[in-house]
Length: 582
Figure 1 (cartoon, rainbow, N blue to C red):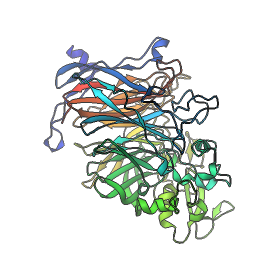
Figure 2: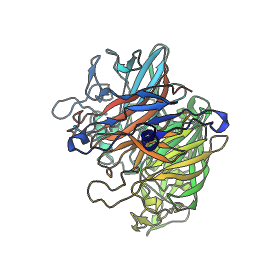
Figure 3: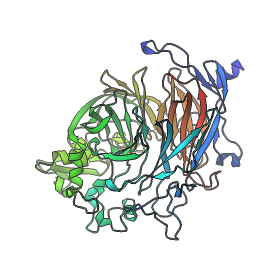
Figure 4: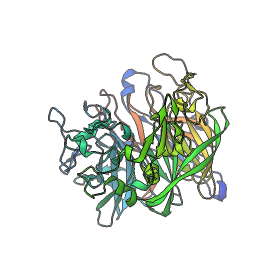
């Protein structure tokens, strides 16, 4: 048995951490890869763990799946601006499950937070469709730590006072027990037409606005929402407009409860930091963008980081730009043409215009007089580029923090395009560097990597270096990244007081996406959960102390219709763990 664990397990050494704090010793029995075809359509998890030398039996417990009914609600059902349930063309409920909906696209259930408030345990769920949705329900915990939904508690959370929600992706439980979410893939406001339409993806938001896109403004979307529960169990919801508008994958709060790192999911995008004026209050602060100053292009690359100030604001100031008449049903907010002038002539920028390259390509822009704050907060990525920040990152995803080593971890799903040097997939191509700074010059790696960022005493990241990268292979049709390594890392979570970084995948280069436990001091990587075929591993998040028990929350998003959940997205927990409490 000792040989079995020394060879196969993921190991947390019980040694003294940096600052004299002892790290918990944990080791998992890893999962094996499926062989039979039918095994590829079910979730498979580790079933055994050693914590401080004591063996525990664990397992994966499903909690809820999209389409389930409770308290006269349907989990994942989308609603319009009047909070009226939406239906598909055939009259069936419009459920954000990620697979069975032919209209509106959408990925399905994404992040789920477990909040301990008022002696109760709440589950907050956000849904990644163009018409975004939030649901809240209560969970029950038995004497053995097993969790289950409490019947009669499911509630839909209205977002109509903040223009509705949009493509809610990753999130986190804040240190003050609230849910911090995201709005991903906001549309390019420059492309909006007179009838309100913009592009096929964004235009599905019409369902929220009763079919009338003229009522919608693309600047309504691309923000960080926060959901809180008060002493009476009532839910409050807001969008933090002072945190900037871009393709928010995740906003991650640091231990000072003021500094927030924000990833930008797309091509030729940035990496951002927000410092709130007051702890536990994100409504006012200062926004920064990172500048990559490359040191090496080896093994995923390394750089020093500097931070460029974009501006300071109260969210009420920015919201006023979106809704001057304080009526969310009328679209009277700013437009792209109110903020910028364009000045390109024969492929070159005219004098007085700034040359940039972001997700919207090579542009020549000038901010109109008095519009600097609007540019900084409504067009954060473009303005960051104009100010000299790096907008060459490719698909920035998960963020998490190891407090003992003071290391921030940041996943890049694919090292490519703007991160290359005038290339695309290793072939010459200047599309992603033309007109830009070309700060990042790395070899292409389709499998992506996870980066380690050192932070100073103020929680400001000062350097960035690849911690591990996936290994591309030529395996034809099934695997294009080695099975003993990561493929397109997505969301991350770090178990406090340990050495374990958990990495979820969103890849087409492994036949089954995996959840890995990576031992940061031993550089040991092992699979602990295999997802059903077609499913993305979203929302891994450690809750290490819920009434003495620990859980790893995970969402199985848009599995194959032949899967055990018949294509429905679902949330569950790995555990219950005992002895993880700090």
